[in-house]
Image (tube, rainbow, N blue to C red; front, side):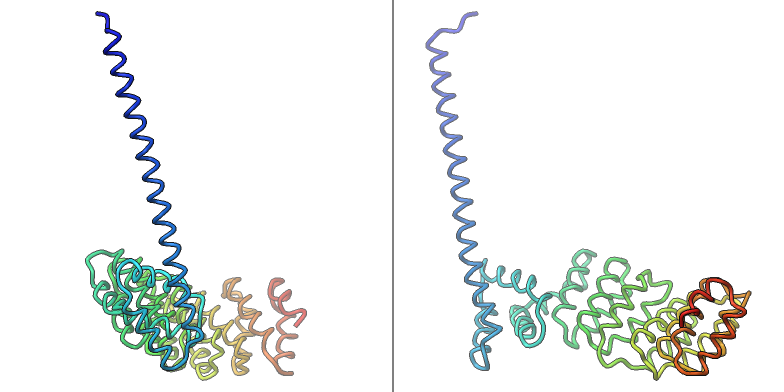
Length: 323
């Protein structure tokens, strides 16, 4: 069946019109997108400028600026929060405190305290991260509770957040998070502990005596990194007791030895010498004891090192020979 020229002409006209309309729609969409981007850029510059004023405003002017940014609503208000959350990790001191005041004034603290009890693990983790940024004593209880969350991701974020919040009350809870059953890597909990101010030696002394090997290990490592001399005797006792355990942990003994070396705890010198030469100890433990002996100050330690070199294995001798 042949199609008439009139039908073909109509079809061509319709197709051409459709193409023109499609092209016009594409142009309008792109123009609208560019307009929105330009508008957003203008808003961002204005918002960024007001936020930067937080660094130089003083007293009443600062309070007024915080109040203004806290009240900003709609899309601009959302941009205020997004911009502050991007900038806060890069700033410290009074400027950071002013930014946090804005976020708290916008209700982010209240919303995060609600969201940390959400059914969604993603929501709980996001809330925990924000609570760490916002800080303050009111975030400690919900974050320490989140250390026992059924989701490992939430537990990890909560541990990091406690380090960011940096409140001394979190110390005991983070030491408990060093447990082998918590699922939280020791590096995460230990890093958070190192960020806390006003450390209480009693927390670590208790940790060194804990039944859980993970807590003993983490406590021993952190005590050395903090150079917490108040816990040196408990650290030494932990190392001696660990050697006598039926289920002794090499990593606990090694951590104790290295931390005793960092602390320069002279009463441990003889025990470290015995460990470094002991055939019953693993190679890693002997080397850790050798490293600790190398760090020990004083003439007595030098004499002990000379005796150890005569009896130790080659790996330990290499550690001590230049001490």
